[in-house]
Length: 338
Image (cartoon, rainbow, N blue to C red; front, side, top):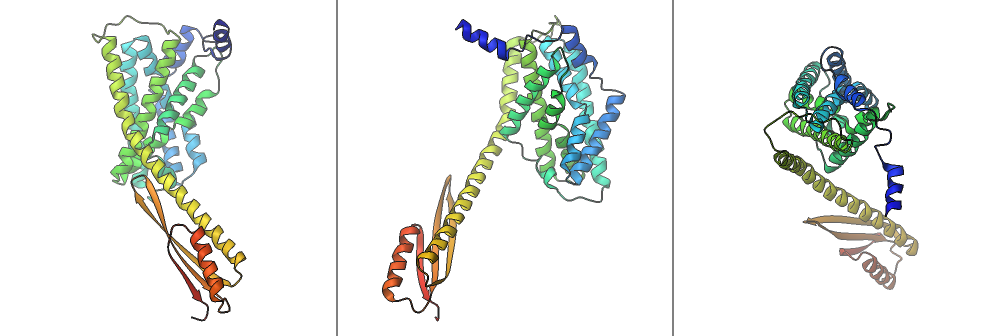
């Protein structure tokens, strides 16, 4: 057991190359300024992302995510919560809220004046959050905070910024406001909240493991109460994404069934024409019906054959069709001259 523990510690421990407490504080708190340059960069990043969404350009959107300073505020709040410093939590929570308002206002203004108002695929992709978005935010947050707390700075944060996508959902929410499409607004803003929340939770978890400097500021709230409220808020946030995921899986299964059924019918049709050269045309109609999670198929087959095909051959053909098209409700053989 000790040997196994040593093996995991040697390969997976995050404590070996951890930066000093002062360095972690400087990276997560002091470098996360909300005023001045960062606010200007934020507005420019929002404009770039909005243009990328408007023009359906993935490359432009990725560029905007790379220069966005939103991640810094979330990491600072995480540090404040993990260290128990309520002053940091309040300062950066208010700042983060201000960043959200500025971002929404900037994207709202852009989408209000742009002559292109159609809903691109990049915009639509940010309106239906799923449980997979939650997982991306969790794993991205873990990777991001681990990278930020190393002795040597890594290139993890740009990748996390792209994967977790904080900027595009905010811009999509601004698009929803500008075009009065409330489904877009609420769907995109919900995705933004999901990403922000679970990045924050993941970061807190790692910072607690690293035993960041603890502060003794009295809040009047017990640790048990905080944990209970965190658990409740986490469950409430996840529920809508789970429901959307269930519907997505059902739709994916139905689409897969339809594609499989269509391919099978086409293959059988080609096989029939090889075995029975007298067939001049074969038409297969497949109707799918849905009952809960079950998908059933009803098939209608119409075969046109050469008039030279005798009755015995037609009967053989009909038996072959019935054997292979098990779900066939109707099989009709029509002579070519009729």
